[in-house]
Image (tube, rainbow, N blue to C red; front, side, top):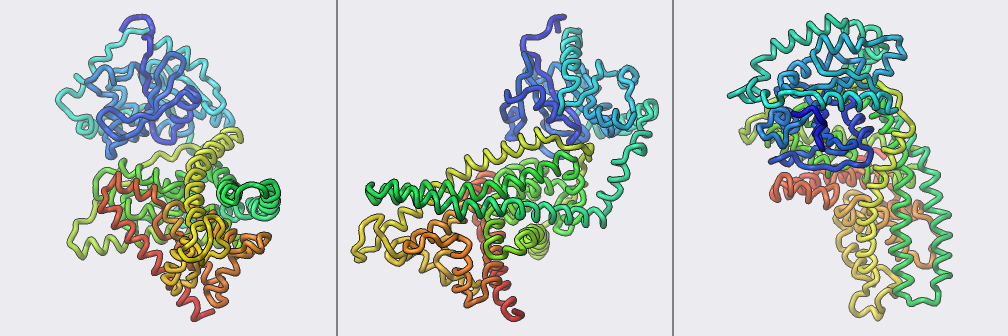
Length: 634
């Protein structure tokens, strides 16, 4: 390499998960990012431009002795025989309070013979405790090219990092000798063979720098003693999740009620006055499709906003990783590999990316096993529906109801996992090997309001854009069916007064008896169930739209009151039981058509059909049991 900087040098960000690697990547690249597949694989990596430099955010690593495809990509990228894929510089990111945890990986990375800059993130946390790191001593002891202390969230130390990166790139390095170090060996085999040597090096560096003294001085050391305890950790986890769901319902309820009540009445009456001289079809489309879609999406935003904010705080603070480890212990009862927990955690945000995340699991058995369980995780689309419906049916206990649904979702994952394991045993199938769940804990941090709101805004925007399209499409299809009269009714399109006279009404009425044993055998609810198969976020729109058609003579009657009357009449007065049965059915049955398509793409069409059958069967059995058994005691 020459003494001048390359035109577009390639820099790989390497480090443990939760070490601040992605935070630094975002701080350096801003919005100049894109997602690509690693060469020859379907594993996604983030790339971005930092001035004239190309940054690659490689998946987090604990060791070059990789287990998952993600880790394999990160490991092989540093030993690629193709110079085009090989980085010119490694930016090794380690967090200051737990620097010792990164030394084992650094011991291995040093053998790549690629220039290394050690970027120590979260250095501000040590400053607040009056602790210091001697960067010059660290550079001498570890043998890296440069050491920089950073606070990436506030962009402190970025200028110094840029200066040292430019300086290091100007130096002459032999970047072609790495393959010779492990010539004739696979990277994974080489890492295993030299593990004792690397552990000894890491231990010597830790002792020389006195890093072992840091843990005992930090309050977080004692906090981990509580949160990672197998008993207290679960209690704290459940308590925090209960507070999050309660706060979400309490804070969002006034906004949801305002949208469903005053705003709906004002906009509906205003549009009716404005459009009274327009054709019936056009006015009906504007009010029952466009306005209803807008109001439905608007109703979902408040609970999602508060939920995303609270979960972002939990994630930014570093607590989410601790809870993942605590939950992993419980998930072992379901026979799950520890790594399968991560796709399941993603499922509580959205099932579709969770299905895609199964690609990171180490074998096909783990991927298919996890694929069966992900549809039972409570995604954000279902959560938003639950908050609105729970507020309508159980206004005084909405937070508790949503929390119980969340807990039930976790229990369903475990229960179905146990059943699948028993089924596999009966069929004589081999049990999957239980791999250890290894993930760096990361550091506790005070969440920044700006970054938290930014993360929340991105998620809300993505949800509104994606869900908004699906909601509008579903409501439009429903409007067409509801506006289409059955032969012999004597009505024209968009002039249907009673639902019984529409195609939609006939279909919904014929399906509704299926749900009578569960207490919600009403056409309003059965139509919402059908709609929910396409997209859970469109369920509220389906219900609201059906009431708008059915109650043309009483348009001022609110959504919540309509819903309570529907469940009361369908269950012969057992409104609470029927409502609970409906909520649990919504929790367990097929998430959405997009998730089914994702399952088909990742795991195959046959598996997708099995998944649909399993979730529908479990959902129907649970809802019937709740209504029938509950009726005995009520």
